[in-house]
Structure formats: structure tokens, C-alpha cells
Image 1 (cartoon, rainbow, N blue to C red):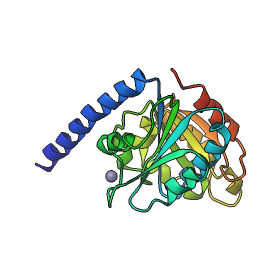
Image 2: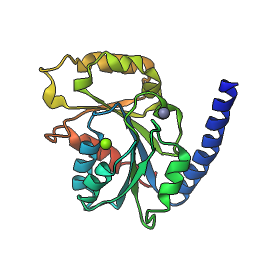
Image 3: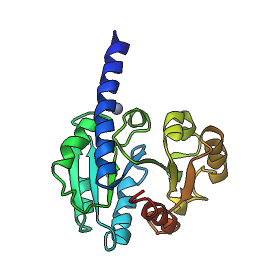
Image 4: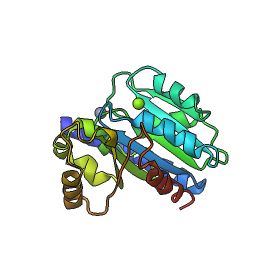
Length: 215
Ligand code: MG
Ligand code: ZN
């Protein structure tokens, strides 16, 4: 019974996500769904990204959090349109939430929309948001072993960003080990190592983003 209900939820979500994907494609909007565990540095990465790209690219951000509008405020301070979704306890975003949030955004001329999912390494990977690409963020502070326990997100992401490279040498994290693991389960996934804090490696991420709009 429980399995039937879950299937129903997922197929309804898929229907909505498919509709969103058609809309995004029709208006030429590149949409990125960023997923990670809590505290991996998604919002800091996005703050830097806004600073670097907003002057030349029309972008907006949807922030997903269980509660509070702190993250949307951080993005808005960078001069970028930001809409906050509060899931009210829900541990992932779904397509309905994104659809509702779009009503609060000016989509005219928009080239890039980044959706910051709720910090959670598990179920965000099973809910399609109609995005053009999925990006997984993993911080060196999380350790290189823990993420190996969440293979679904690895298999569903086109890009892995390893964040907090400024902590390498102080934490138990072997970048090569993660690269090998990722290559084993998702050979097509690209990997970029950055420090959103210091800016190291961020150009590769910007290049990845800029190459996509209109595709
Ligand atoms: Mg955040
Ligand atoms: Zn969830």
C-alpha cells in the first residue's frame, strides 16, 4: 500500500516536471538543480556565482529550505532575483513547489535559473524538478566516505562539484578516491574541485554554466 502511494506521488511529480521541462525549453531557459547534504556550501557557491555572472547573464535563484528566508536574502543582496520556498518540514523540493515559485519570478529574458534544493543527500535525487541539469555539491568537510553511501545522487548528476578545497590537508578527504568512485558509477559525470570561499577553481564552474544556456 505504502509503495503504491509513493508511486502515485512520483508519477504526479514526473508529469509536472515534464511540463516544466517543456516550458523551460520553449523559453530557452537553462535550469540547474543543485543538491547536497546540509552545510556543503551551496549558498556560498551561489553568492560567488551571482557576483561573477549576474553582470553579464540574466539569472535568478530559487532557494529551497525547510524554513527561514535567510538564503534568499543572501542572494538578493547580490542583486539577483531570489524566491524562497519553505517546505515546512519537507526534506526535498518537488515540481509543484518549483511551478508555484515560478509565478513569483519574471521569466522574461531570463537565461539561467538555479534551484538550490533542500540540504539532503537522499530524496532530492528522486524528485525531478524539470531542470536541464543536476549538479551535486560535496564538501571536503563531509569526508570522502560518507558520500559513497548515497550512490543515487551520483548516478543522477551531470556535474559533481567538490567544495571547500581550502580545507584539504586538514580533513580526511581524498579527491582522487572520490574521482575513482564517481567514475565507477557515473563515468559521464564531470567533476570540478573548488573553494567557494577563496574562489579557487570557480572559473571552471562559471565556464560550465555559461556554456549551457540556449542549448
Ligand atoms: Mg543554503
Ligand atoms: Zn525528502
